[in-house]
Structures are given as C-alpha cells and as structure tokens.
Amino acid sequence: MPLHNNNATREAIISRYFPQYRFIAPQAHAGFSGASCIIEHGDRRLVLRQHHDASGPAFAFRRQYHVLKRLPANLVPKPHFFHHGWMAVEYLVGEIKCELPDTQTLAGMLYYLHQQSRLGWRIAILPLLDDYWQRAAPSRRSPFWLATLKRLHQRGEPQPLRLVPLHMDVHVGNIVHTPTGERLIDWEYAGDGDVALELAAVWMPSENARRALVQAYAKTANMDAYQLQQQVQRWRPWVLMMMAGWFELRFQQSADKQFIALADDVWRQLQTKG
Image (cartoon, rainbow, N blue to C red; front, side, top):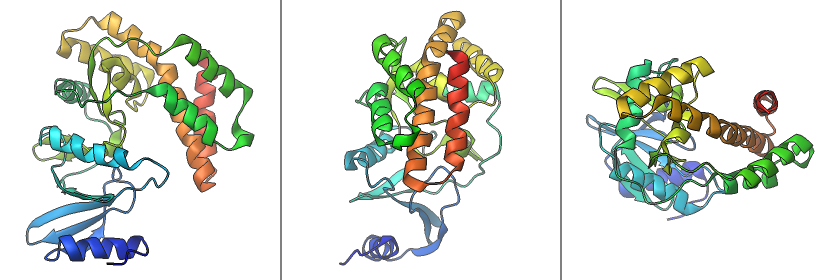
C-alpha cells in the first residue's frame, strides 16, 4: 500500500485498520500535535495520531503508547492501536479550559499520577539541553546561553526527593475536563523523575500560584512543604532552560518569529534569577 504523503498515509491507515470508521475532523484538543484526526464508527470515536517529530527517535513515540497502556483510564485516554508511527486513542468527551483546575484538584491529580508504578526510563535533562544548543540557529547561541549551560553541567541535576512517573508538560491545553474528572493528554515527555521537577515544570500563571500548588501538593503527599519548595526552586533554572531551548528549536524549524519572543522572555527570567 503506497504511503506518499501525510493525507495518503492517514487514508491508508484508516482504510486498512479502521475500514468501518469514517473521518470526522482534525483533532480539536490542542495537546495532540501532529497529523491528528477524529474517526468515528457508530457512537465510538477515536483520535488517530501520527508521530509528528520526524527528527525524533521512533522509540519515543512508541513509549507514549506504552505510557497510555500502563496508566489508569481515569488519568489518560485509553489506547487502542499502534502501528509504524501511528496510534489511535480514546476520544475524550470534554472541554479544554483557559485556566488550570483549582489548586487542590491539580495537586490531587498530580499526586495520583505520582503514586503509579514507575515507567522504566529516567528523564535526563542535560542531554536535552545540549541537543537544543546544538540544533538552535547559530545566530541565537548567545554567550549567556552557553555560560548557563556550562554552569548547569558543573552543578549536575538535583538528586530526586521521590522518583515517580512524570508527565512533564502539564498546562491548560493538556488537561481535558470530562464529566468524570480531569484527564491528561500528550505524554510525549513522560518518564521517571523527581516529584519536584514536575511541580517546577507545570505552566503556572505566577510563582505565587506555583508556591500555592507546592503547599497543596506537600499536604496531599505528606511531604515537608519547605523541603519540597526548596527542591522545586533548584529545578526551576533547568525547566526554564528547557523552555528556552524548545522555543529556540521551534524557531529554527519553523522560522516563526513568535518563538523568538517567547524564548527572549524566558532568557530574561533566567537572567533575573541569575
């Protein structure tokens, strides 16, 4: 069966593996990036998603499928199919809102995730930061970026307080509010890591909101709130470097100048913290 382009590939996958399903629409949930679409058969809907990062390793996309298989259905969309860079998962009936869940609900959702069995691979930040540096536009590789990267290399990643499964991309666009509760989508960056790294990486509207989340999480998880807050602060420069590096890479890939503005904002935050 010839697979000449994205549309033909999608049609071929549907024809071969989902012959009774019909194409409905591109996927609306923002968390599903890439060539995603909704297919339907009777009252059953699935999201058919293609691996969108051609430069990324194939095993990373397969890992996402395994994550969805291992985690409980009240936390993730249930997976149904995987084949050569395509997966089909449950379509979540719900809403993606403009605000995060309330602090206690968000803390409870993260704690529930962190109580699950480990996934089996560690999240390593330094190799990712090095990769962003190497793949960024040469004109964007500033002395400050290099100096900060070298400083993090010398410092080394913080030793984890608790090693747990992490989502690592929790923001409003990756939370679907369903009638039975909040579910997380887009598990591209998932792996095992420090509980404080997850809290440092949540896209919060302010640092005051982050501190409130850490307090609520510490109470829910029976952890020392001060110790947890200090560990989150240790991780914040690492998270900011990941964010800046990702924006720089996306600018290099797309030439979209909005990513320069986003990267520059993160660089300013790092310079303030420095």
